[in-house]
Image (cartoon, rainbow, N blue to C red):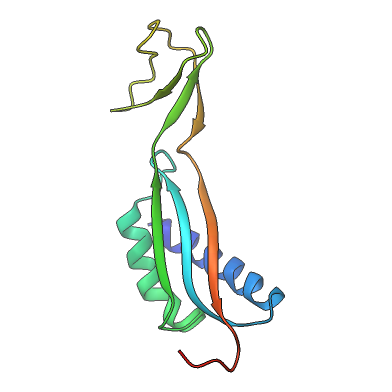
Length: 119
């Protein structure tokens, strides 16, 4: 399960972002996870539950936004949503498609609670 190493890296990045923004407690991490990223959403959530308490605290929540697999046909320039991993343009039947989104793992934002503020 490479999701554990991905979550470890995510938590290191989040800790650094929190430090550079005053060191507040991390409340929520919003993550964009592409359908074609090669990462299982459920396994990311499991790894986060296992690793987050020791790294950033028990109060932190992870919200995952699933990003659909989208592409652009290089032949007819049509923007398309790829379903069932069929990399073929429905407009012109070309297989010359370029992925434009859906393969990413990106931190959307992080909510921090100011130091000394009670929730």
